[in-house]
Image: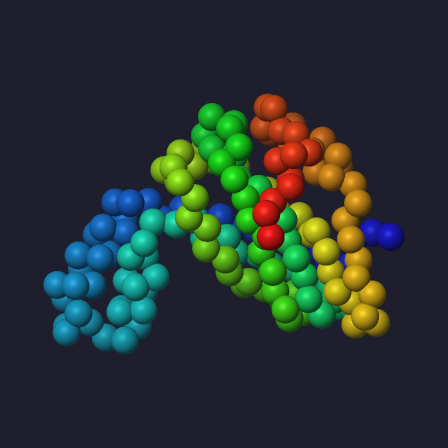
Length: 154
């Protein structure tokens, strides 16, 4: 069975340390002069992180588990996470990722997202059984990827 969830779009946005420090400075020093929207925007950028935004669809899915794998600018495995939504997939699902050495992803890092599991409205759980497929596709962009890299800790 093919995946019941289709990933339509992925945005990976790195918030570097310099941006976080500047946002922190503005937030603290100008807080009383800012309107609510400006406070929300600055608060969003106060910490270094990797924002992962997934747009996905799946008419029969009621919950989804995505595998997220991150490689740095030197094609070295940086880590990964399991991004879970306990709701049907939609546009704009957001996860923050803050591994050690996050600066190494700046400019040339690679983020891979795939569907690991989906709970269907019938109660059935669909499982992804072919990690080699992800390895083959990602190896076109990253040297040295292995199936072990896809074993993200839940």
